[in-house]
Length: 428
Image (cartoon, rainbow, N blue to C red):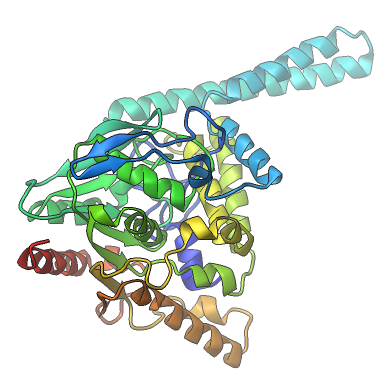
């Protein structure tokens, strides 16, 4: 899984997320997402509401999940949903303590020894769980949300909207991977001096609730639109997404083209890369690392400030789409294909080459294979141009790579600003 797929899984951002309420469990670029409950009822839909120019329909079960789920997938997401609860460590610890007390009462020497061990483990787990909850409470107290929370499908989603409203489309930013909106705070702040600008923390990130599982691109596209509605932000929007976030905003535009004036895709994740690129098992390794981090957080076995277990679980759930099998299960609800966006103005912003990815591409491969993979990635990057008849290509400054939104934020803001000027000139 070289380069762009690895970057998309890692999050596509400079940091794992800037919100002080969460902590990145592993050294990684930016964040990712997960949620573990895909059941009918509360959390299955994303709510209803009325846009200024139309009616918003709540999501169906298949839209929420991206399609029918395998039984194994349902079980895995149910477990992720359970693990995402920060309080879970205490009942687990109590079970260990109860088991220890029960064994100690058996009377046999072996049972007494085993019971003592279980009791000690339970006490340690309880102490760690309390530490985790205390750290989480302190983080929430010391870092109040900068924006407001809106209800989406029975859960709270954090939205930060700044800048003068009216006079043109509102810009909505979506970082890569499953990073929080805060990862694009610098871009948002610069844009808010010129235009209305919005950051949204997807469920499982930032100041938003963990929300329902699984985390899917299709479900998060609907949640994004519902959050904008709930926050009172008026269409039309210019949606800007980086890496995995680019796939998300393109999906949102496909679903509700009447609400979107234009798209700016910052080196978005091409589905072809997920389906056809050679994989070294990095996505599976990342998901396992996130689950280990969730367990460490749950029982306070980590250094530094507290991190939500839900953040780790959300990331693990979202990563499922970054495997060929995972994408195949949700492809119809997820992929934005040739012509899907009609004549929607679309700006595709990509580096000219694979700067920063040469070592990853060459690892364990001969020169011919490396050349073939490089050619594949460069061609796949431009595939989004076929999604709209009004698409155009912009190259990033020389020497920049996939993380260019963090390397040259002024350039990104200027590209978005140019599209806004064109839309206003055309009365859109």
